[in-house]
Length: 149
Ligand SMILES: Cc1cc2nc3c(=O)[nH]c(=O)nc-3n(C[C@H](O)[C@H](O)[C@H](O)COP(=O)(O)OP(=O)(O)OC[C@H]3O[C@@H](n4cnc5c(N)ncnc54)[C@H](O)[C@@H]3O)c2cc1C
Image 1 (tube, rainbow, N blue to C red):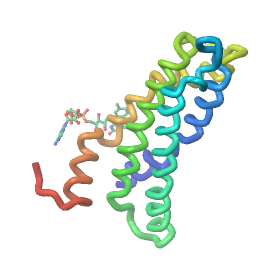
Image 2 (tube, protein in one colour; image 1 turned 45 degrees about the horizontal axis):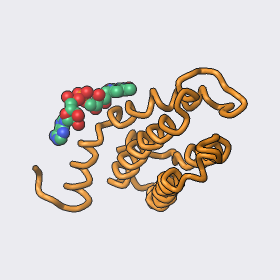
Image 3 (cartoon, rainbow, N blue to C red; image 1 turned 180 degrees about the vertical axis):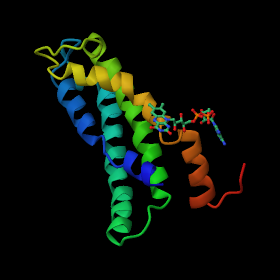
């Protein structure tokens, strides 16, 4: 529970904000990528979900301040945090294209090496510290009180 709690502790909202900043610069169809409503919708949805995660994190923090052991909210944070990380990496790969494949910054994407690392690394976090399926089992049984499958 401690490992899940800590592995879900980081909020990737900064990554989404970075991606939005890049989208505002990247040229696309005579404008920028941000002018495309599908791209705006996709990035906005990620931003909304990261914001929502903040409140589960506050619940976890409250338990910690009270000196209580981490509860199943650690599994919720681990599951949502790592799965959203994969979706952010997917969105970055599609948006940045070749810029996300090279380990060298450019004028357009100065932090390309970080995106390249994120693309490669995002999936592993859905496996280490207990896979997403195991987190779903924990949430189903201990949060929702469902019978064992
Ligand atoms: C990058 C990385 C770092 C790691 N670091 C460490 C570390 O430092 N220390 C350490 O001890 N371990 C570490 N691990 C191992 C990690 O904890 C295990 O890989 C992980 O818990 C999954 O276990 P497994 O590989 O045995 O897969 P398995 O348990 O064999 O699972 C295989 C598949 O079956 C699914 N599955 C299994 N059981 C169920 C079930 N009951 N219901 C539904 N689906 C199920 C899983 O979700 C998965 O998709 C690391 C793994 C990775 C990828």
